[in-house]
Image (tube, each protein chain N blue to C red):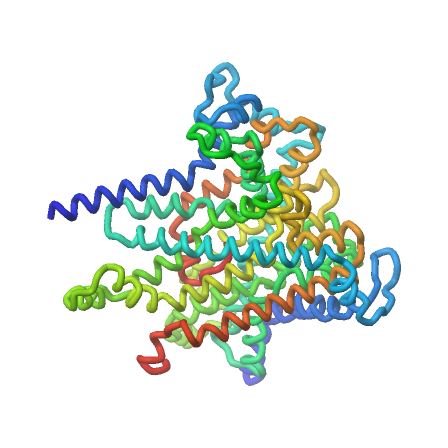
Length: 297
Length: 283
């Protein structure tokens, strides 16, 4: 009894996750792969159609490739924007002055409300053609674009909501900055290094692991974006904000083409894997791990 | 010394300006609830021209009662009914699992741990269709079970990982001495570890609360009758169904819908920041 206890008791503790993983993650994963080769709606039973869904996605359905392009553009605007702001603000917050936790709170607040429909509603109202943003621009004589109605800039407007929520990346940068030993900067100062070279030769290399982590997390997040575009523009104007997530939603839950939607989800999955892998591969070249020099722990 | 004081002032000035830019949209949102559409669109002032002293919370009342017999109070209640069990079950199940991974060795543990970590990267999009079909078959559509049951079964690798890391930081000697005193494996978890884990549990709970409260995509597909709508869906129909949207009402309801998050954030700020700094997840 005692022996069985020690050998399997750990398994007993993780059994909720095992059940959950098998039924709500692994089974759906396998099933969606199988569905992706079928013509399947909730009302009719599945019919095996080989690669029809995939062929249609790339050869016939122009919306799919378009939605991929939109998603990439979105990620290319949102992710670097977010990380740059996060780093700049983290640098500012790393100075030792009073009231830092107060500032930190204010800068972090938008991230808490981030994914809420309330903020998407706010963005929609603020960036309407005669909304507050344009009223302010008019006040100082700057041209007032139609932020949500112009297909060339609507996606940019939506990505600005994402960039505004740089708080969690910022907190990570801040934690990393606090880890950097001050002696390094002092030594550099003695050697006559300028602020700029201190930043590029000490700060940036030492926080590359966090840059890397933020880059991966935020890219994954951006490629799956849905709520803001769905609530603010509904994919328009002229499908300029029609993200892959929205395409998936429309095919699966408006048209009930579950097979086709599954195929889309697998292509999205493959792309996410590929991009993550590329970032991982590239990391050898630019991510600097302290552990390597200290010897593996 | 003087130079340092000047730098201090400049830093404060930059930071005050930066924070104002950051929270300006939220402040504007607050004041917009006291304006009519004409003023919301016609003016660039943040303060209302004329503060409606006679009936300052008209927009809040109108929104709260709603346009139909189903009002925001219902959406609020629905959100609570959906969120509270999800958060509680997440904390319970994830700490059990984390304890199992952190303190025991068992057959193929390494494999399972690696599998658990790799699901951190699994996009929701790829499993959403079969999940929907599964929940449909089980008759769970239009209930909150699609949120509550996965929480019961620890389907959140973020929190498992976070708690595993936390338990690993607790000295094993604590467990050992409790074992000497005749404590069982379960007893060690409840009497020794969980009390020490409070900050981590609180942190995990806060994040789960925030994510479930704000949840949109999943409620959009699983919940389809208006009387079951949580706040996120209620807010969306309030601006997409009316032909002339009363924006002060929408903004008032928006603010009320995120108010619990703001309050929790201000009271438990430390835990949010610690939770993020130790795990660095999402957002």
